[in-house]
Length: 145
Image 1 (cartoon, rainbow, N blue to C red):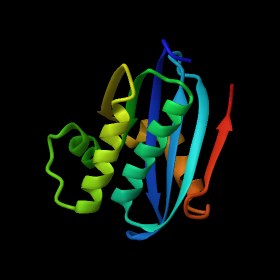
Image 2 (tube, rainbow, N blue to C red; image 1 turned 90 degrees about the vertical axis):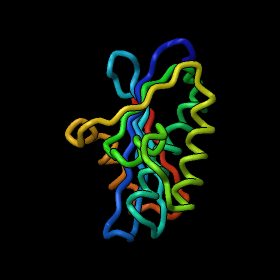
Image 3 (cartoon, rainbow, N blue to C red; image 1 turned 135 degrees about the vertical axis):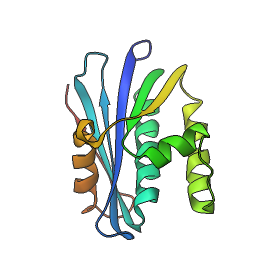
């Protein structure tokens, strides 16, 4: 996969806040074709933790798939702002998750992250909502190409 550019969309979902939660991510090729869908059950947590766990899930999977150049997109303005350093992180749990995501981002040759509207993030959102029903830590993957 290496030299091509990929897009990773991520989203977290919670049934209540806090509540049963899931993480979802979708990996696209440079033409917008869905290559993989990922989802992970998170157990009982907050929506912000679910958003970070979705970002981490997506980055881990992109690394495993050999992606080197990636554009990351998510609809959580808070997570994007905290990741980019433009928003302070007061919660120690979120700080730890942000640090983990930042460390993972160093595995890419080219890395970009930006906020997108929820209307453009429906595929990752659907994976996150499916993941709410998974056992905590359970990861599922669909290969679509």
